[in-house]
Amino acid sequence: MRQTLAGTIAAKGMTLGRARLLQHSRHRVDYRPLPENEIDAELGRLHRALDAARQELGKLRSKLHGNLAREVNGFIDAHHLLLDDPELLRALEELIKTGRYRSDAALKKQHDKLTAVFDTMDAPYLRGRKEDIDHIIARVMSALHQKTPLEERKLAARVGEILVAETIGPADLAHLVGNGLFGVVSSAGSAYSHSAILARSLGIPMLIDVMDALSEIHDNDLILLDAKHGEAIIHPAAQDMTRYRAWQRASVLEGRRLHLLTNAPTRSRDGIDISLLSNAESRADIALSLSYGADGVGLYRTEFLFLRGKAPPSEEEQFLVYRDLVLGMGGLSVTIRTLDVGADKTDTAGLHLHNEDNPALGVRGVRLSLRYPAIFTTQIRAILRAACYGPVRVLIPMVTQPDELIAVRTLFKLARDELKHENVDLPEKLPLGAMIEVPAAALGVRALLNHADFLAIGTNDLAQYVLAADRGNNALNDIYNPLQPALLRLVAHVISHGRRANKPVSLCGEIGGDTRFTGLLLSLGLTQFSMHPGQLLQIRDRISVLNYMALRRHAPKLLHARTSQEVETLLTHLDPEVYG
Image (cartoon, rainbow, N blue to C red; front, side, top):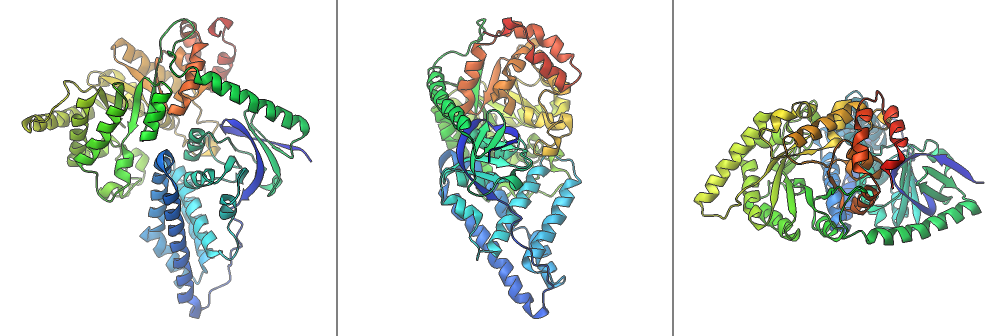
């Protein structure tokens, strides 16, 4: 019988497939006390399950290639670290030895203890860590019950299916997509979680907050996942199928139409040129950026170089990567962001950081780089050398105050002097920019502009800090909203001061590549967007029907709004002159 379940769109699209349920809690936990003479055998059973989980992650890594591997390997590394965490292993063994818990009961107890601790904290990164715990404990629990075929393995062996789950981790999502997964329906999650961002970049439709998904959908149910209207339709009727076929035909035509925009200028309806840059971290991203006509790279992430080894990458290793990036863009500008990790990754590239009570507000970004000047200087030297091969800018993350930029400039000057003494070719100039993601940086932007050549607004973190809301926590979806007036005023404040100082300002957060916010960002005066390369054509198309100057005239009303609902209402009632 046809049934419709409503949800929140995390990744747009529409697809048809048979449901496969993934419920991490499906295994029955054995709470019977463990006899003393079975303790050693139970410890062996636990460690075999842990080894099986490690091997499963290793096999997953070996199956991933290219851009997908670079998207996901960071999450696999995090899961490996958790599986080898001495404190977690010690706690599990103690529960078995002293508490006489069986392995699955020990895993369940430790899972509940850790997630309860995370629930009491406010740091934005913690939702991601909590989900990591969920996924790792579930993986080990599945390994304990290997006598029963795993749902994940059944999913991987089939094609044309829609995953129905409470949540799904980025690594598992990538693996299942590679084995024929068509879409995702989850009962929890956030549109700004890592999995949702990955789904959007892979073009996989995803609905979240589908409250009754796990109780109302059953294995093999035919599902029409409509992530255009926010519906999961169980047992779709003939009229639903007609609508789906029409959508398929329209999508093909739309794809052909957008492809014609590949080499078109990005220009508003009233003739204002807008710059579209790409966010990248791999060769595949660079190729896609060029094929879709990006004006350059607005954000090149260097973290993957530091997360894949036990020691920091050498100067030569970094230089070759940066040089190839610059050459690959064929003379277009490239913005390289310096190392942006923090103490939530406690064993990053051999840095051996100390655990912090609140890493999201701790030693991360430029704060970390300045505490490790030798490692930072190695990266600086590599960037300076690569900048001789084409136009390069350097972006400094997590800037809070001018002193940090002054310290960075000092290190750049020392590195330049060293390289000059070594007779190494150097660029004539190397613009240095500040990433605006800390509220203090946004409020004090005028002082930063005395030391920065350009600015890049990182709305993902800026929103979290301004709103004190973890973007991965679905309970805060009503608060973590890009239309919040306080956030809009800060963004407009930064753009305005950059314009007055005649210095470029780009925006590289998720909203930059979301057509729902394009008109809003233009109204705030933004003329430089940076986004995943797969979103370039949609944004170019959207800009072409918008009247920039008309939107700018609406900015005062938007900035005087008192609530996000009021902003949304104003946007939906803009004058007809704004649109083509």
